[in-house]
Structures are given as C-alpha cells and as structure tokens.
Image (cartoon, rainbow, N blue to C red):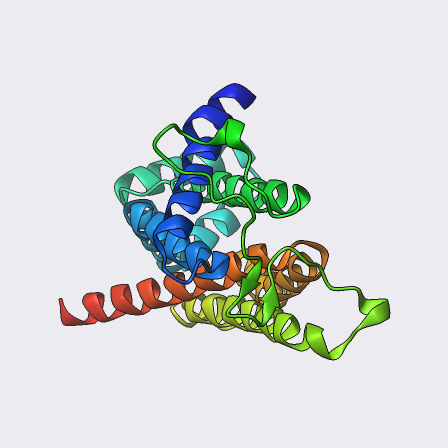
Length: 253
C-alpha cells in the first residue's frame, strides 16, 4: 500500500511542486505551494462538489430522519430498515460524503510528507524522487516572499518578532476554517427544540466543529512546518469560494 501511495500520489506531487518551483522566475517555494494547491483543488472539484452537495442534502433531510428515529427508537432493526428505505426514496447515501473526504485527506497527507521531507533534508531536493525530465534546483529558497520560513515551526517558549508573519499565516488559516464551517452551518435548517426531545446530533457536531476545526488548524500550524499552514490556508480559501459559487448557482436555478 505504501509503495502505491509513493508511486501514484507522493512522487507525482513531489515532482509537480519542484517543477512549478523551477519555472517560477523568483524561485519562491511558497508561490509553488499556492499554485500546486490550487491545481490540486481544481482536480478535486468534482469530488468536493459531491461532498458539499451530499452534506447539504443530509442537512435538509435531517428533520425527517430525526422523526423516523424517534418513531422507531424502541425497535432499532425497524429503525434501520425505515432509514434505508428513506435514503433510497430520496436518492441519497449518508456515506457518500466519505469518499471525497478520504481522497482529500490522502492528498493532505501527501503534501505534508512532501513538505516535511524537503524541510527535513535542509531544503534540498531528493534526486532519487525526481523524474528524469524535472531538473534538480538543489537548495530551495525556503522564504515565502522573504517573510515566512516555510520549513520552520513556532516555538511558543521563544517567540520573536521574526515569527509574527508566520503567526499571522496560522491565524488566517484558522479563521478561514471558521468561516468555511460557518458557511456550512448557515445552510443547515434549525429545528426548534421541544421539551423532552433528544438534541439534534448533526447540529451539535456542526457547532462543535465550528470551534474544533480552527483549534485543530492552530495546532497543526504551530506544530508543523509553515508550508503546511500555507497549504491549509489556500485550500480552505478555495473551498470557501467553491461553496459560495455553489450557493449562488443554486439560487439562480
């Protein structure tokens, strides 16, 4: 499995990043990360679109799902049958959003490994991982616009003025994560709570993710090389733009 991952995901991504870095006049690794991230997100647009649409449909169906769950709460077997029939009738699958999420997670792991391995090698490219048609740039310029060291992590015990641009980058990544989750929540129908009624699990999860998502992003931004925070920021901003576009497209139908 690891060999397949390296051959079909890690190595192509590694070479694409170095190729883009080579052809960009200023030789800025941060710009290469942005370009590659946007290319990846465009490649994953069909999957991302399917995931967003699946999430929205499940949110719209949630009140009826909850009604069925309440109706058959004492008979789990019948509850399962009724829910499966309901999903089939509405042509939806509660697990249809999982595959796009898994694919995006695989690419996140791949870009992390690429950035981590390049940073670990002292910002030098591994000739063994390069295709024959991709030239080796040797030492990579690790500074993003001369402000952020993409190979560095934040040491909370020894903060300095030079860390400010990187901290801003991490905070922006966390804020963008908050905005994206907020946009998803805005499309979720809110059902009034009644006495003795069980809480809506999907709404609880959405509210938790509104804060857990940004906190996770902050953790990743602090603990891992800044290049990953840059990737996360660009990726999330792309998703925000995509969600906005899909919402507008739905309104014009």
